[in-house]
Length: 192
Image 1 (cartoon, one colour):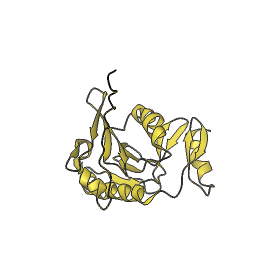
Image 2: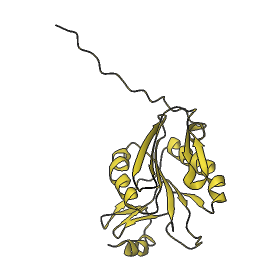
Image 3: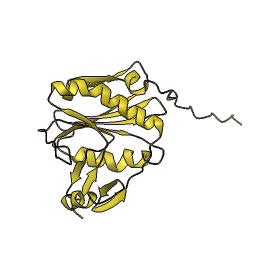
């Protein structure tokens, strides 16, 4: 089905779905508390600055069309397009955030990143792990190329000039107790 057909179809569904390669795929329901808290913290932190640019910050009920046969529902969307109170999708999604869940990390890191990077309006993609201090940020530069930066210290901030904002990792993880992101060194084998 096309994205337009999907928007008509989804109105009659009782469970949330995304459209992937023309096929409706049921979304996970009942996120863990750490996922919900991180999502809310991000919305609260980004919304005031985004408003100064005329943008709206919403959570997972705002659709992002990822092509003729794709529709995703990021955990957070900053939409800088014209307001449309009856709209079903972001007019100009500028920032999208995916807060990973145990069953979604592989898809978030592969398929969704590719789809979001192909969207002309998206300038920033953030991937947040709610249980570990780890935020990966993809930003499109003035030449249309993507840079990737990883943040793993609660004292760090992510600059988001696209929406006149920045967000501290502390704000993302406030009231959560994430584990520190530790890279384990491979064990050295004893020499014979």
